[in-house]
Structures are given as structure tokens and as C-alpha cells.
Image (cartoon, rainbow, N blue to C red; front, top):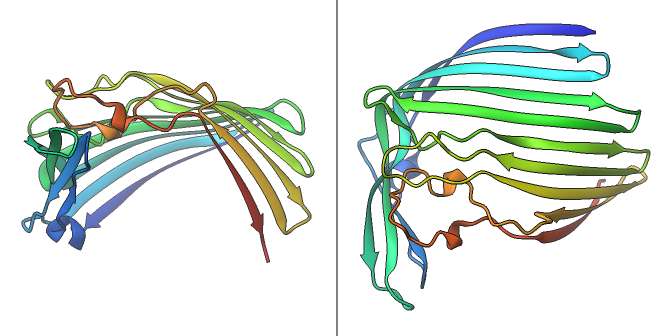
Length: 251
């Protein structure tokens, strides 16, 4: 077995991108929900200090990588929900969520990541990847909209001389870190399968079957920071069962 640990501190400085300060985005469809982002010429640069510790290594046939971090921000750039306006649409009234990029005076984000892979044979292994994040505006003690629930992947890999395959369960916990009156999301689990074949060093064929059980689910990022007003969220759901194929040639 072997192990290595590390720790570091990073400082960050982020100038507000031009499009966040001056860009006006308006997406109002014929039906469903719309999105409008207002420009903000008063954005100032974001500054941060990030502290990270990690441990990685092997124990027998198990490979692991564990990370934890703490980031402290001044003038954190965040997209903030302002209001929902109702506008006429071709098929009836449309709820338009109006947001704007703004500076939050002081923000703290902490989290952890885990990666585990256990070799069962020379060709087969099982794996677990997971991440956890918690972020708050330390001035108001409210959660920031970029906070995400516990999520990850659990699956099995097969790697042969020419063939390879992967089956994985993508999962996320129910979101419990949201501000009063805001939308939240339920937990979910989605099963995916992927297989591929390498023909020599140049050709590769790949076939993917995603969301095999055709589950209906939402990413929290799709509704984060918006009011829970009882609207229909079906337009924000992720794709159902789908299949894709890819052929690549390297030269």
C-alpha cells in the first residue's frame, strides 16, 4: 500500500466578465417558464482564499483520493433571483423569472470529494465518486444558489484489449440547504450504460444508453434561488431515456 497527503492555499481574483456586467438575456418561450437576466454595471472584482487538504494512495487493489476544501470570498459574484413577472404568451400566461448577477459581500463555501476504485480482476473494477458542498452568505446567513446536494456515481468498469464498458448509477440526495420559500428538489437515481470498441489505434466506436429506467428528475441548479410558487416544473426536468452513438477517427 502507499499514501500521499497534500495541503495548499490558493488566492483568487476574478474580474467580472463583460457579459455579466452588460449582457441582457431574455428567453420567453411560447409556453412554460421564461428566463430574463438583467445587466449590472456595478459589479466589482471577486477575491478569494481557498484552503485544501487531500489524501490519495492505494491499499491493495483499492485506489482512493479524498479531498476537503474551504473557500472564503469577498464580493462573490452570484446570480440572484429578483422577481417573477407574468407575461402574455401564445398558449397562455408565462412566468418569467428575472435575475441579475450581483456581488455578495462575504461568502464561505466548504465541501469534500471522494474517489474510490476497487479492482476485482485485471479487467473489471467497481468505483464510487461523490461530492458534497455547502455555501452560505456569511453576512445574511442565507444559502447561496450554487450550493449543491450530495451527489455522485456508483458503478462498474470493464476494460479489455479492444472492448470496454461502463455501467453507472448517477445519484443525488434531496436538497435540504435552501432558503425559506425557495424551490427545492427530491433525490434521484439514474442508471446509464456505455460500451465501446477500439479498432486499431485510429478508429473508436461508442454506444451510450442514458436514463435506462426513464426516470423524471430535476437538477437543483435548474431551480435554485427561485420561489416555490407551485408552478409546473416539467419544462425543467432532465432528458428521459435516450441513446447515442459516436464514431471517431484519430489521425
